[in-house]
Length: 486
Image (cartoon, rainbow, N blue to C red; front, side, top):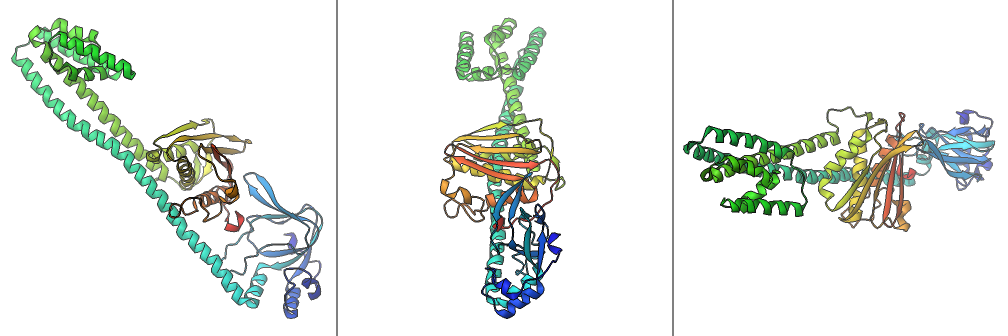
């Protein structure tokens, strides 16, 4: 690294000219002069690399440097300065418990530059021995923030889990209750079919009539599977037609039977086939037998749909939690989005969901379980912002040929202009006290940026708030993100 190259030293008097050291004693300045050194770096060189272990503290003596942060595939310049004494690097080396500190930004020399360099170890030793009270206070602040963030982060995860559990329970309860009701109804209908069959047999049916009943029954069952979807008006008109048909032939309770035949796709013309081959005295029994058959088929369809729904919800929960899957793999980004939407289904009542998915997107190397937490936080925030009504839009696309992009937008009131710059700060929330930890977006930022090397961006105006997640298609090295980085 260029800062290893020692080309000289500074005197205590020269060190006192740096604002960071101006209040130190003569002995302290002498100590720094003996442990630090001057390094010269050429224009265009990288002085410190974001994500590398933080081994040095550097102070600018001459020249111009920039600090930049990696956002997706881009380096975003955050600072450009020629101020003598500007410092960067292992500035938290005084915290003994923080053993994994990495450079939070990259430093580059725009011009030839001279730097005063200290190792992080020496800097930490000096600060702890010279300012013990201040270090205790700073360590307490640092560790307190970390502990608080960890506890509230777990709380945030529990809140998200609770919301998902409530939604999943609600979603599972509906098809389960429908299946129970349909099963009870099916038991009653089967019993009724046995009674009607006994009545028909007692009357010594003509074999031709029995053959007709069986044929009509099979044709009716097939009609259930292909029944067209009628509008409410068409459905009412069909029920009226069948009711009139039944009343004309003296079939009792026609108004009860008509909805069954209508739901099964049966028309008056179809019933004419049964009427043509049935003796007048047996027509009502044959009609009711057919109704029981159709209602049984409809109930079986309802049970099948309910069980399929339950199975789909369980599959979505398994996909969401990534059971039986490796923690890091290449996945179709849409699988996690769809499972998250299904898990949050109970919260989407009254919300129009628009899914504009680009199905040609390639698989992305991600931590699926962690990424699902991002989708949960962003979608849940959008739903809460819309307060039960509005449009949630999820759009996927390719970005610059190197990233998969996911946009999650809502039609809520937007983020107030005064707080837009703070939304990714830990513990910052615009929600009422007790309704948010202020860590949802902070956690999401860390997962997207630190874990996946991607970018999480926000744009907002009334009626259109949009969070954009960009995930690189190439493997990225995870790095730590501290509150000061955000």
